[in-house]
Every structure is written in C-alpha cells, then in structure tokens.
Image (cartoon, rainbow, N blue to C red; front, top):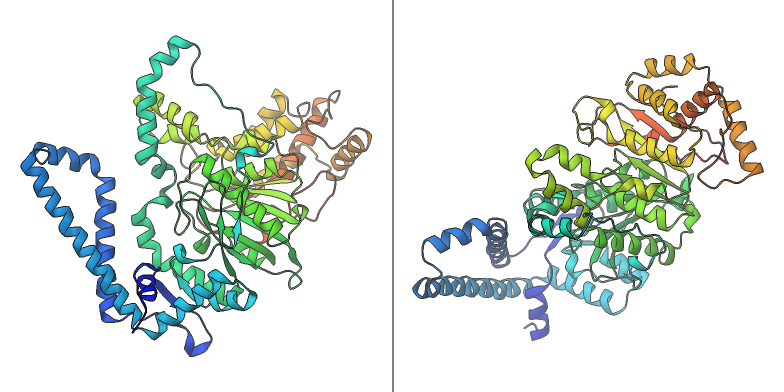
Length: 534
C-alpha cells in the first residue's frame, strides 16, 4: 500500500513519456488503463480551458446575450464549473492510483526524488534515462542577477512628441497593450500556442530522443532571475571533435524548438552545442516578451560559463530568424565572445509587422511594437564589436517584404546599417548604392562578374585593414578610407560585404548547410572561410 506522500506525488508528478536505454530496453512508457483514461480526461479539460482562453471574448459575449450573468444563469454556470471541477479531481485521484500501482512509475518517481535531494553524476545519469514533463525536472542552475543589471541596454524610445500627442495616443495605447498581451505576442511568437505544441509533442519527444541517444546530450533546467524555468539541452564534444572546445549557443526562431531546430548543424560540424527554448515554448515557462527573453539568454550565458565552464572567448552565439534578437542582445552584453552568427534574421521587426497587417492598423501596430515588443536587432548588433557573420537565404519567403524579391530581404538592411556604422568613411552614399546593386543579385555567377568588374584584390584590402589597425586600433567605428578615392572605397566595400555575409539558396525554414557554419571573420585574424560562390 503506497504512502500518502507517494500517492500525492503520483497525482501531481509530471507525465512519464519515454524510457531510454540500450537495445530492447528502449520503450515508450506504458500506463495502466486507469492512468491512461484519467490522463485523457485531464488533457481534454486542458484543451477546453485553452480554447476558452483563446475564444474568451466570443464566449463572454455569447453568455451575456443568453442571460448567463443574471442570478439564474450564474447558478447554472456555477453548477457546470463545479461538476467539471469534481471530474478533474476524480481524474487526478484515479491517475494517482494507477501510477502508485505501476512499478515502472514508482521506480521513476524514486529516481526524481533522489535527484532533487542529491544531484550527483550518478543520479543525473539515472535521471537522463527518462523523458517526462519538465515541470518535475529538478533545477540545476539558478541565475540571480537580472538582465536589466547588465551594462548594455538600449535606451527606451518615446512614441510621442509632446503632451498633447501623448494624450491623443491614450486610446491607441490601451488597444495596443490589450492586443499584444492577448493575441499579439502569439502572432509574433507562434511557438507559444498550446495547440501548436500539442501537434508537435511527438516530434519534440523524438527530437529529444535523437539528441540524447545519438549525440549523448544532457538536459538541464535553468531558473532565471524573473522566476521562469528554461529547458536546455547540452551536447558535449570537448576533446572529442576538432571544434569541440568551442560552445555554440543556439537561439531558435519564433516557431522553433531546440528539439527540432538549428542545433543539428553545429553538432554535425563538431562543436559543443547548447540549445534552449524561449519562455513559453514547450517546457520553458513564461512568455517571450523582451524582458523575459533577455533574462532567459542571460541565464543561459551564465549557465554556460559557471556550470559548463566554457570561457567567453570560446562561445559562439548562433541566432536564427527572430532568435537574432536574443543572440544579438547577449553579444552586446558579452562582447568578448568568439563570434556572432545571424541566419535569416532582420534588422527590426516593425517593418515586417507593418507589412503583414492592414494599413489602417498602422498607428496601433507601431505603438504595440515600439512599447511592448521592440525587437530592434540592428541597434544591438552595432553595439557588439566582435566577429560577425550574416547568412542570407536567397529564397527566404518570411523576412522579405515583397515575396521573391531578394532586394527586400531585411537582412540586407541589417548588413548595410552595421557596415555603415563600423566603416563610415567606406560606406558613403555612393558605396551604399553600389552594395544595393550587388545585393540584388541572386546568381553566384552574376555576383562573381560584378566583383570582377571592380578588380577586387583580397590581399590588398586585408593589408589595408591590418595597417589601419596596427596604427590606430580595432575599435569601431573605424576611420579607414577617410581620404580614399571612390574606386578604392568600392573595392573595400565589396570586400567587406563578402566577409560579413554569405548567401545560400534556401527558404526560411530549411537547415543551414554544414559547410556554411564557420567561425565569423575577424578583421584582425584572416581565416579560411569557404564561400558558396567559390
């Protein structure tokens, strides 16, 4: 007969999904009949609850019209809610009974309890044999320093010109706030939607299984300074692969999860890799508002340094799509990292948001973005002084404001703004026009012909940069080119574009080719970077 403590733990402990092992020991967890049907009942109520939240304005209006907010109607609603509550409580009790009488679950429960009280390499190894609801996973790292305490923060931009303009905007501000805090954040980060996560649940389980079984990954639970829990997965290749002593921290897109996201490319390239899920994505708690995103990546960086013991100069930040926001924020605040790679990302989310919404909503969209979800990546990147690589997808259908037109790819804007900040005397108006023409080309052959027309000598351009650095410094903005001829500026501008950005023919969501994942170019240290057009 199980104790009361064991019974209560079985009632509320997370769902056991899979048991890892070797050969015939690998299996899905098989619940008893009682546990299976009680779990189905609880899940059904969860789906109904989520549906109710998403459709609450419609439901409230319907109930009001039908008189359910009058005394008789409220009595009916109370009976309905009470009945539902009794069914949920009975289901929880039956689930506890089913689990308490299942030896497999009791063994799993014992493993979790041991890990909570005494996390050692041996108990962690036992814990890693199970895949279960992350809420029951023991916390292994706590970050106590809030991200707002970091040295680099973008200044808050005002959205009004004077007090009259501020007063005029009040109705728009209220609507913008309500929009962002209901459906807006889910439109920007669809990975937070419960229905999408339910659809992808098996894929996420399989993705974790692949990482754990094939790449010997290790799962960790991180507690952030704002009381969120971040699900992370670490693949350790130190001393086992040519690039294993370098850690790549992956920041996923707005519907990306580390289980099925961009981790695969750096893993196969031989790097140690740390993946994590945004707040509100899969097992991570919270919501992906900028402050919570900043606290999440800050905690991940602290975890990489303190728990995994990687030096900052051995860490590469890799951001895909909207993940460029957290990657660039971390690069801005940890400027001595090894490099920053941004794949299929953008300069600012506002132009993309305006492009997808009706024109008459523009005032509200601007307020909503600027006041609540100001993902201004370029302002963060220009505050990062280290090695940078941008990956542009020539068939990207997401971050182009006009589908099929590569000249409207917002990564072009990111590149131009960064280069103009770093090399202001090279990238004057004439060179901006020149680079705009070059970036409009999608064919590698056309790009090569364009470069040959200007007779670029990589050795001469690199020597000029080295001479400037040795005489002045490597700090940005550099004053190189202040008294150069236009032809020399053109050659250097095209040379720098080649070094900072690489194309590959692909759509937004396919995995990046392995050969493109390289340490970003540094103006002080030439590397053997391989370009697609060579």
